[in-house]
Image (tube, rainbow, N blue to C red; front, top):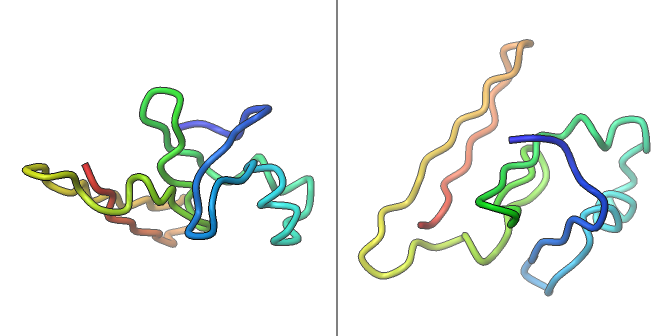
Length: 85
């Protein structure tokens, strides 16, 4: 888990997109963009908490179990996601 990195790229239902461009399209203020936790498997993004998950990780592969992730912030709010394996 970390913050975004230059050149971050992930896949949405409509195709691949740079994370920076996705945040700009969503009109997320520049000062807020680094506050979104970015979950990675190696160098690949699988979830940006509160925004989107990478479609390559949407469904578990054959014979694999999904991973359940629950992010609880210091303010007590939670954000949940099920990620395919």
